[in-house]
Amino acid sequence: MASMVMLFIYWGILGTTLQCLTSCDAENNISKDYLCQFTFFCQNHSGNTLEIALKGLGSYTFVSVLYDKGWYIKSSPNDKRNYTEKIKITTAIEIQELKKTCLGANNGIIIGHTNFGGIVAYDRQCPNCIKNYGGTNYPLEWNTKDYSKVVCKKCHRTYELENGIVENKQEGDVKLMKYPISYYNAVDKGMVISAKNRL
Image (cartoon, rainbow, N blue to C red; front, side, top):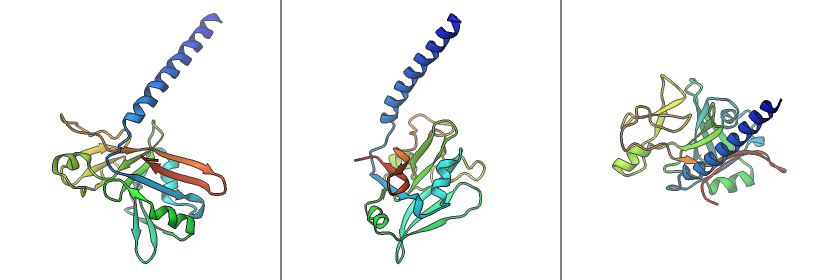
């Protein structure tokens, strides 16, 4: 019995230590090079692909904003259907939030739910091309051989969405730019998705 108690205490201390280490490290992994400010009210759009991506392990979607005679959020999930959902934004509070929206380097983020690390938000631009060539027009696309990865058409690097690292990493390669994301129940607003790297 005493050995069971000691084992329980050991695992508790180990878990707490690991949590402290990873939470401190998590702050260091947040990109602040480009502004990310995005809020989406799920209750106004039932069955939307953004919320589905955050609920399913290994599910991700590309997110961008479009103004075309009205405001829209475009969402292209990694479900192999090659489909883009165009979500019309109509309420005053949503339009107000959308006008403040900045989606990283070039109007695009990737949100989803990793298998082991919870929900994530990454910039959709290739950080290595931005670093090596300048500019911000290097959009990542789904890797059609493995939809849990994205690929850059310019440099041909493949990134794993589970952890943001470059597959077959070379010296000097950097990870995907990561943004803080939350998915929570707001009073009077229902479930909200929020990705913000600055307050």
